[in-house]
Length: 302
Ligand SMILES: C[S@@+](CC[C@H](N)C(=O)[O-])C[C@H]1O[C@@H](n2cnc3c(N)ncnc32)[C@H](O)[C@@H]1O
Image 1 (cartoon, protein in one colour):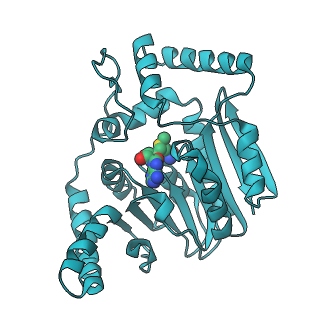
Image 2: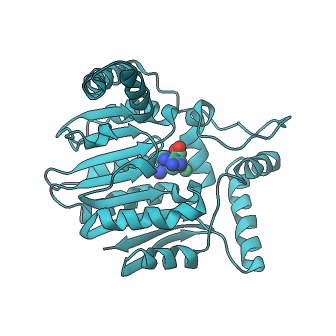
Image 3: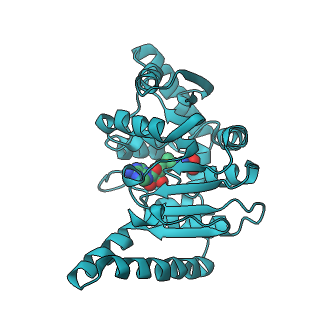
């Protein structure tokens, strides 16, 4: 993982594509001087991405109609170009309280960011959390490391963040698997609706790694769609969530097709399960600060 170990910039925006970097490494090892080739390419590539980013057209303003027509074949949900183009609309109309959560994460980051530390946005999508943190953090020498494994998300996220002139807090966007990104010297770590996409058996390991990488007094903000153990409660929240989506203009067909597409990729767990895991990873202070229907956000402080 050369990209995030390289000294981070103290201003501006840097984009790395870890998948590209790996390919460069493979290519380099076929030749000689693997690491210098890679380092050289990394510099050139980040410039390349910056240049591409300037030219990148912002395509994320479309209305979500991905599941509006009957689909002949249902494929698992992916964060691909089609989803990226409608993502802001999709998440606003699907996640109750999303806007409130984003702005409050900015406020939490302002309080918990520590001078000279990293703030992580894991599963950053288009960088809404990074943007909110960046606009609020006032501590000196802080930077933000935003990670997502969807190249389309990172490409658009870089373009969107580059237009933000409200702050000088540096952001490094990494296109790669968050499981492979080192977490160190962290004061704020955010998993905003990301853990639910990580295989259940890997979740405790990730939370332990975040705990280990946090400085004393550091905070993990964890937002998730949750499930309820009691069938009656589960049904109540699922039905109300569907009402929420209908009220936001989604049809029954869209709701049902999207639900099927997400079935194998998004695994919600109970609030109790999340809180127990946070304690098991070492956090003493764990609290729920937001809930709307079956969507919650928790804090865990080291
Ligand atoms: C629901 S979205 C997160 C929304 C975003 N945090 C926000 O607040 O707007 C989940 C994101 O996690 C990313 N993701 C899922 N698994 C990942 C992994 N293993 N490594 C990096 N990103 C991942 C997906 O590509 C997707 O963009």
